[in-house]
Length: 125
Image (cartoon, rainbow, N blue to C red):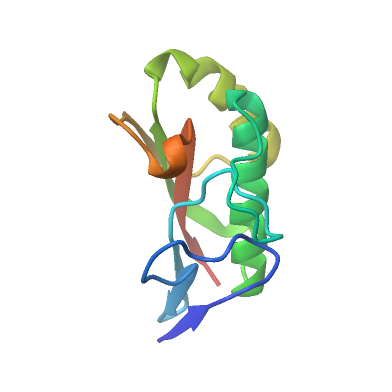
């Protein structure tokens, strides 16, 4: 078991790792639309722009773990507003292409930094 830490994704904003690798599996922490440059501001107030950055962050963490988007088995999407489901779904489909991991999507009251979307993943190494 080992933790993943990459400068290609935002640093953890709490006492957790960007991801953990255990027995050939990668478990990522949730990603929000922060930039990897260490800025503390969300990229945008637009859910599509946030979703694109979230998925880029997720991709970068997976790659740092020796995995990739094509090896994702399951994701969980957290939305601040379920009315954004269709928009996020479109961005998600672009990011994953023909690969269709299992997925859950839930609406939550609030997300860290008042983000509009957060996504985590489980993948094979």
